[in-house]
Picture 1: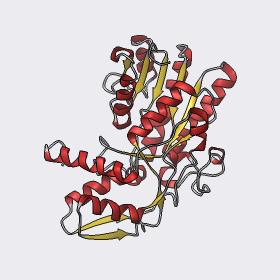
Picture 2 (picture 1 turned 120 degrees about the vertical axis):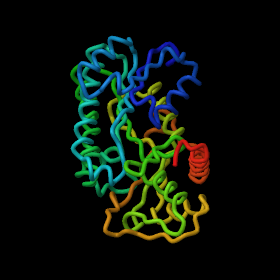
Picture 3 (picture 1 turned 180 degrees about the horizontal axis):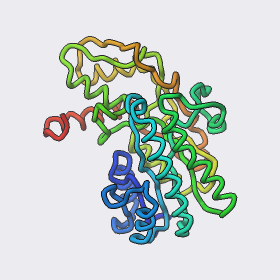
Picture 4 (picture 1 turned 180 degrees about the vertical axis):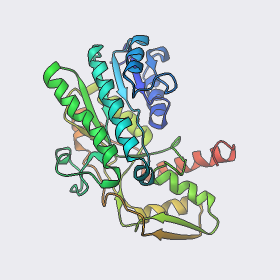
Length: 313
């Protein structure tokens, strides 16, 4: 279905984007039919840059992956930037896509859009039942506005846009920069760096669900091919792990045998996270396939190789 379409993938050079673009090409889409706007040339926070992008590349579909994102520390440090940058990118991009008669707009939201105390497993209908967890609320709400826009634009203009809610991603190519990385790459790096002790934020009692990046790319492509409604859809693996167990698992897989210290002065973030993923199965037949231990091993091996080559330290 996508073979003859011209596709803009914002964030196509990023962690998820590289895997998604690779899968699109594997599906038979010519490279020249995929356009990746790079930030230096197209600042998607600026309307004139978005207009120029649509002028430079006549697209049929937009898959909007781009975003400013990070872990709890990054969210606490830069809440204003996270709100403004993500909001401006999403809102203006969808508006210009509508004005340029784009056939389909695929908006990628975030698990951070859910209320802080959402019952587990998170169901799409719970999305508006409360305020998000405070440390990442500005980011989560900025992304969530694309859902409001998507539904309003379908109602008023008949504009075909969809809104997907992926849970925490991990995998080869992840961001290992300690100033902005998420929990899995941050822990892997700490275990490689440390000799005697690693310090981990929070109590270890919170739970998270983790979603292998290749599975996420596949889910987004299936939704792009088959899903045409504005109701949000969760994308995830449908399991949860307590952070304490995650830390011990990563320590074991990396060979770290030192002490694990918990810094209880730092926040846990949302108490629990696990998605109900039944809607993605029903609507576009998506089920995550990667076993968590296997995904972790691949991620650790990738990081180890990059480290040995001197690409990452």
